[in-house]
Length: 87
Image 1 (tube, rainbow, N blue to C red):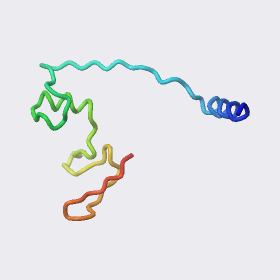
Image 2 (image 1 turned 90 degrees about the vertical axis):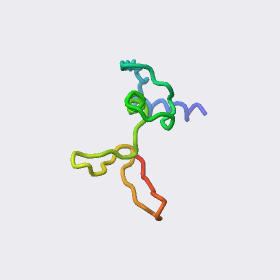
Image 3 (image 1 turned 120 degrees about the horizontal axis):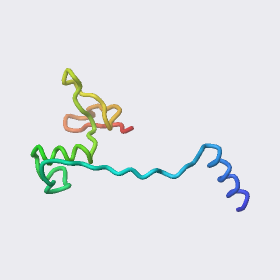
Image 4 (image 1 turned 30 degrees about the vertical axis):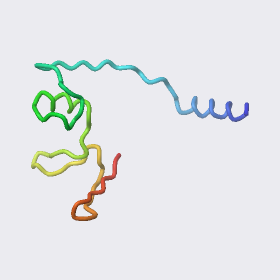
């Protein structure tokens, strides 16, 4: 048991294990979000708040092509089914 704890401590020290730093996120907008449910509302204020909270699977590039964001790849496996590989 002691040997396992010592080995874990050595590995953690070797890879530079450190505590995570807390960061404050401040957001200002013209009003308050009425819900944190991404499906509840579809208005610009709500979408601006949700854009800072949730990350989409894919986005649009400069030529409006689909580009990966959370998903690294995707394919259609059936007419109504898509499979996404997440990063």
